[in-house]
Length: 456
Ligand code: NAD
Image (cartoon, rainbow, N blue to C red; front, top):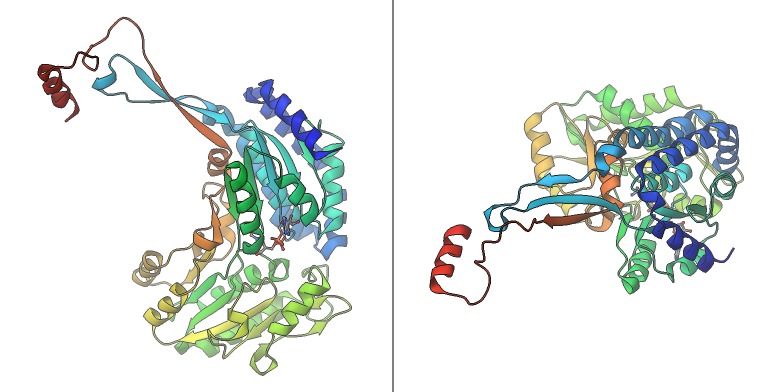
């Protein structure tokens, strides 16, 4: 079907006001949940074929989030969709004031490849919960997951309400020629710029969930063993292809050796290096990313790992030491299983180096020293993060998720997502039985004195 036709259908359906009915939205969300459940085996199979992601990781990092968001919306949308009364003030007496949450209309969700289900479908679920219609354009790189999403959605929902368009840059460019009421994009900074420019033509509001280099501070007083355990899991989950993965470590020089040993021990305990593809550890999405990552490994700096197999598109968990801020690996987001470790002996200097770079999507701080934790939280700007953990802030839907500066515009998850896909319509509601007459001509000094008295 032509994009123009789907868009027209969705505009017509939105204008029928059906999606404004909260019970309609709840029915659709329940239906979507049962479709996902019925098709779980297809979803697992597709993602395994795309990049060797196991059922365990797929459930934990993708499907569980979809179910959680659906349940959360089913529970709360009635409350969140209600008019909210606010106070009015004497000037408008005897009026009332309230805010009406309303859906935006026809929305477009453009997904990234690295968590293909979560990144395309959580925004879609959120858009539906807020009362919109939605067209989803998943990433084309994991071809099987894109195909399975198109199949289960397009076969089960009418295209005038919820529809998947498959394709890459060409199809996205075509979609962007049309006017949407909202565009929600997850992906890289360069493509984010393209989306923002295209949206500006139509003055379409956008949310951009982008990337960046997320620093991880490991201070001298931390619990080294637990820090290593949590970092290794967060970094090598999805083979490091996670937008909020710890990108690089800044470790206090006094514990560097102990910390490196702990990282190595933890990797060895978690993964069977060389042959462990599929069970616990993923491969790289494609050979071009494999080649990009391979070039980032300076073999003089390898502390651990760096087993590469191009035929299997596999890079084992790799730790680099003696890295400096000037090295190639510190230029762009790594987005793979390579963890550079930089030792510092002055926290202020380390903070300064982080602040010289674009504001990151995430930051992690491992320490038992509240003063130092607060200092870092106060001095650094970043999208979100965690203290003594990594990545897991994403799993709390009460925490708005999104970037700041170059790492993104806007946020979502839970209520924050509902707000992102809503407009808050402000209403002053006045009866006829009283009029103070102060504001009307003919003006007079007496009226002005009274107005001043009222307003000041
Ligand atoms: P990408 O920017 O290459 O692609 C994202 C989407 O844009 C895809 O659907 C793709 O088809 C489309 N696209 C690509 N080129 C385009 C073009 N020229 N015109 C229009 N559309 C185009 O990103 P990716 O490789 O899929 O994902 C990796 C990036 O996404 C990383 O930078 C990562 O940090 C970021 N990311 C951010 C988040 C987040 O929540 N903030 C989550 C995951 C990934």
